[in-house]
Image (tube, rainbow, N blue to C red; front, side, top):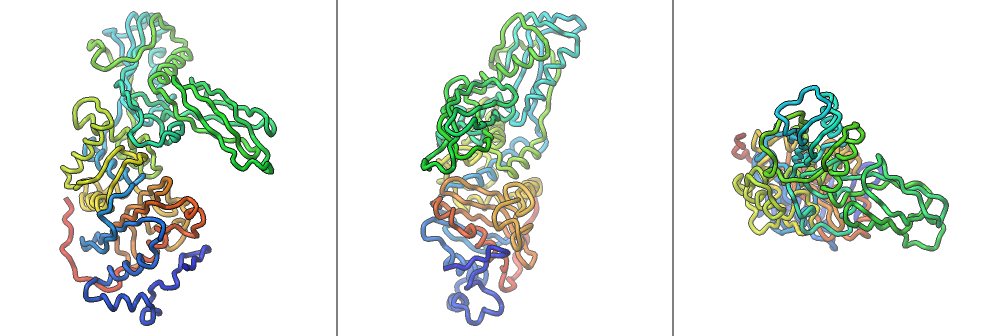
Length: 506
């Protein structure tokens, strides 16, 4: 049985230290195999043999950045579910295909050859969406208000919302009961406030119908039948259920234990309908009247004789990637991969073409994805399959290629930023500030991939994948498997290795 010191560091009774080296059973094992394995391999192999969980499957790859050599591999060719470390692939593809400086453009245009100070615009108006994953309601309002700023009060034509008609809004393998939650928000050309609506459920007493308030008067409808129950109730199987319907209509049923109000984040179900209603509301708020209608259309169907009135530019791709990796933002990941695929194929794409573009682009970069299965860009799909070796190849390319090194710098830092800021055992010594990596978690999956700095100051890339982790076992773990392993990797190398050929920075 392992002994875990929860107050400061994770300790193993058989962990190798200089004082124990002569009498440790692990050291004896190392001595027996020293002619076939390097000291590093012996050290890590002993750790893995000791720590490997019986109920789950693990894979580990470790790479010495300075000496450009493999240090250790364990099940590194086994295909496993990557969860959100899939975003490492998306980051590299986006950086390669779009470039760090690419920005999404959302434009307001008109069929009028020019806009004078007349109060009536005798023309059509176009809002051209581009799939900007961070376009906000306020930014869209600023675009529309540019018409009012030019003195216009009435539009005699129609308002067209331009974007691709995507029939499939979620990737294959997304779990159906996640689809109403904002981390699984639908991907579309039309993204406003990340296609997510916030609400709050408040109690009106136990076993009484609760009050649901949608924040910001957003154009969705929720039929609320939920209620709160007393914590002392014998009903322990109490949970809420959100049922999705067409046209951004939902039904909230079930119950919640306690009386404290509950914040909700609801993913819209129809981005096109939602965008039309949002834009319609903005025009009304700006007191701009329309003689025609608000309509969705494809880019190729519009009049080419149009005039740009105003435009909004997103943050550059480098910043979007930074947020995607730090916060593990699924919608940014899917939008970046979709846009990369559209630029790669030079036309609108579906999910199958999107993932094919990822494979093609990474193959061109020298990443071998043979036998891998790529279903999306975020890692949310249960259909994704990658090996630790393949993920390590992505990390190595980032580390060894100057134009992609900023991607590694964007990864969360243990105890300091992103998804590792408050993660258990990563927010304290010895892992705090020593590990910079992308997390990947979902039911049964606990992965980590990035780099760590050993106690001697050397930097190592690593990929640690764990699949088949029981929620019950995870709940009762005193420390994550990855944290225990990484703490014990801090002591490598045990001996000075011969210098290898240094990596050339491209």
